[in-house]
Amino acid sequence: MANTQVALQMYTLRNFLKTPEDIAVTMKKVSKIGYKAVQLSGLGPIDAKELKNILDGEGLYACSSHYGIDAFEKEYDKTVEDHKLWGTKLTAVPMMPVTLWNEEGFKSFAPRLNVIGEKLHKDGIILGYHNHNFELERFNGKTGLQILFELTNPKYVTAEIDTYWITAGGGDPAAWIRKFPNRSPQVHLKDMTMRIKDKARSQVMAEIGEGNLNWPEILNACKTVGVEWYIIEQDACERDPFESVAISLKNVNAMGLK
Image (cartoon, rainbow, N blue to C red; front, side, top):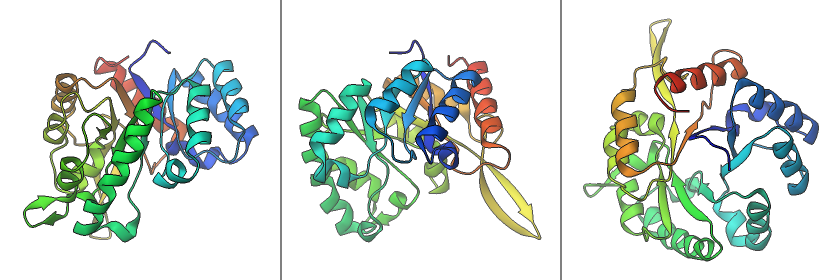
């Protein structure tokens, strides 16, 4: 395992990860920027052993991954085998199927997470759920995210709070992180700013520290609940994505995360 708390969510660079050759080139660039760990997501087809060789060659540790629920339900053995090969101890379901974005959907999805989480726990892997903004819709006074985590076993299903998407849903990321003490081994760091164009207002993703989120409060909350991995992500970049992830790493290092 790398001696670091910071990782890059590779989904940020998904457009540069289409082939095994692309992946090799991109991982080299990521390592050169200064990252020592990554969260696997957004990669094109590649043999698990070839990916491990690339990661090892660049001194990168795959601290975590994102896999859809189908991968665990339909290809469990292969998925777990790959994680063990990489030495990856954390994973997360990145999103619920859009057909379940309603009260009954949250209630029906939670047991599926419990089943997979318990199986993964026995195999030494910790399952998480990664939020977007739709989980903050309220149903009879409770948000979907509340419903989901109230119906999942803390021992088997952890939270991977995404700071941008909580904010986009009208929530306070620090407050949400504090809701899950000892249940938040990883967090997604993602900043938000505003753009005005032709009198239209839009929220956009920004490099960490270049937007408007309250990072001292967010990082304090992370320390309070025991976050182990601070994962930088930027779904959409207004500049070269490699430049964006370099800026974010520089800024989080300046905040005390190494």
